[in-house]
Length: 200
Picture (cartoon, rainbow, N blue to C red):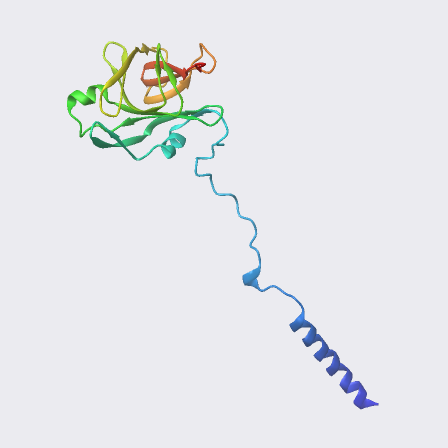
């Protein structure tokens, strides 16, 4: 029965076409692309829960590009910045500031910007959380000023003749005490740490 043999392939072909058009499939546009390598984190790869020193790239990303002080706005020098993340995530950030637009009398005391989310012990003085200007002065002194330019405190600085790589600004751990750090401008530094909590 030749006629039956000719129809059989046709029926098979039609059945395949129907199955192919009704079976679920995914087009190239719907395919999920293979996972690509993760992009660098916005915080420079720093775990936001990890306590410790921040380098200039990490601190620079957290600091504002410009800061207000004494009636003017000045740019931050992100290349000369540093910071510290304390247990619990609280931050301390410092940076030198371009004070070229300020009077020379202001430039003598206002060299950097300090932002702290916790009270600090600076040398033998305590500084509340806030935003401040600061400068390292002649006579081995550090002055901290409020945003209006009023001096709030002075504390002694120490010259470190053994510092191997002095830079305009850096923060290092203090080898003499746990949980204490040193804020350096050049070879001079002030010791800092979280101020002890005061029970009410």
